[in-house]
Length: 384
Image 1 (cartoon, rainbow, N blue to C red):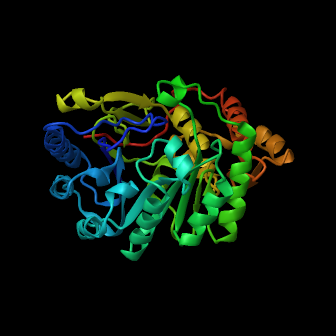
Image 2: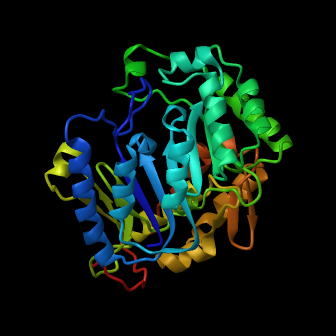
Image 3: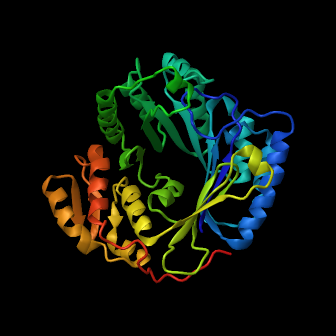
């Protein structure tokens, strides 16, 4: 385990489209959170002592914590960081100033992921964001001036949005990374209750514009929704897309670990923490065993999001399954349709295939349906 995710659930505002596990701070809850996090970190470190290559603080809004709380947050983590480790913190524009940025630098943060979402006041208001255009611009400028690798989150394809203008604005600021998403209206959110609907054609046009505008500015599309200048790709998120192992701390945080039981029927274990009240009470995470075939399917689904694609040979070694022979006929058919490329037992989605990725993945999964779910993978190991 060389990557760690830390969930900080506290937010100054609860946006109407957000379905992440977020809460407002209230009396004593941050103190209780930090105490519980320190206990959880010690226990996880005893099993996976590191060192870490990537550390990611997400939320919520981690930068919303007060200065002394941020210091305690970092002090709670006993892991040593590799030289050159990527340390990312999600931040909202309204939580940043020169003093806060200097503190984050002193704590070891070297990458900020800024939840800008748009540079247009009307769009930001409709999204329930606490900042406006000026605040967004200033936050990006301060982050770059302070020397952080800076990523900007944008939501594209919204009603009334000039998404090309938002993309041009981000590129002109000189950030190294842009995450450009289309909004998903999730059940249970205020947006869903209001009956908000999105235009799928508009979403497709937004992604085409993102690839054109950001590409011209030197930010290449290395994942379905992520664009970066050379060397500015998110190393931590790549661990997810490559279906590697990572640890997770905090309420509702989900980790992926080497198997903790003997037997060929298990490849790895997913562990998902309970929400804040039960997590504070010490409730154990929910565990799910992942078999070799499930791991192979997930790796195809996630890896095809990346421009680099999936190394099927390496996936066969990890899972112990013979995959290429089962996939080959389907791969030829998909390649003839111009939806994928294959090279030396590696496969990836073409530009034409990215919008149809869901369909491509289902066809590949179907090609693997004849494989036994409990085939031996031959990988020794034990959690704990």
